[in-house]
Length: 399
Image (cartoon, rainbow, N blue to C red):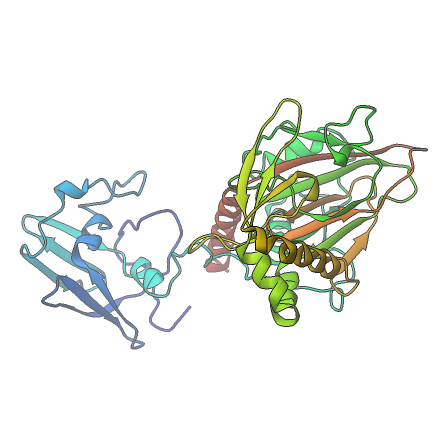
């Protein structure tokens, strides 16, 4: 906490429910364009548009219960209408628009000025990894994950940073995965079901439900937005083989861009049709294998050869597209990038399905290998982690 942060002297409701230290404003001035420039004692300044402040002001725009703006844009003051401002003796900003007055929490305004409101601000930064530094999955003891929010926070934070994290010492109970997901958010359904089994079936609905080896891939590239996270929980494992393999897509993409620029260009620009071929489902999407999407969208790697149906590009580009895929698969399996580990009963591995490629070695059918799996979207995991981070901030504020 900085030297100009003090105890809040008068309650001012900020937007949302994130706690903010009181950061008294030292000065505020209105300019000719309808902005208010506010300053703090440490020299930080911020230009805030007056109508935006109206939407986020206590006493005018904000509903005090849900802490969201209640002003329809048509009801906002007309741009250029009368507006005055002053800094209260306690450092809050008070603004008057005609006959309406609102107060703005100075800690919340500083939070926005510093970028704390941005989607990834409270989340761990990605850690790009290779097997030079990471020789086994980042691991958290899951003994108390159902009762201790600190353990849940540690697991999800590590998962967000590395795109991969393993819980150990969880119950090898088929119902446990669904119960744990209930502590995080809604499971994303798919044609595989809500929570599904991964084991060798006599009549499989996917190559995952065989004893075959699987090359490095991501799940459901046939969707407009593939699932954000996948979770696999080991119930039994009595087979020989079947080790899991993981590759960090961020490291893979960087390696391709740095040392295989022609393949990188083809993988990021040439489109394929991806189609699910299940008997009872027909999902299709078109996109490149390395899909950066639009602005503010995360990387999506679309890489699963059983559902990559046909090239959607000029004929002249098809040979180089196939060569680029060969390079992609070769680099993804390079021992310097590919992590290998066995599943033990009670292990529960989460990974970012749009970032981390996963595969497995073939296994024999002389015993039982039973995993339970499910998906969850990025939005829901990130939301839960932000809420857990709020709790940690409150605890730190009281220590």
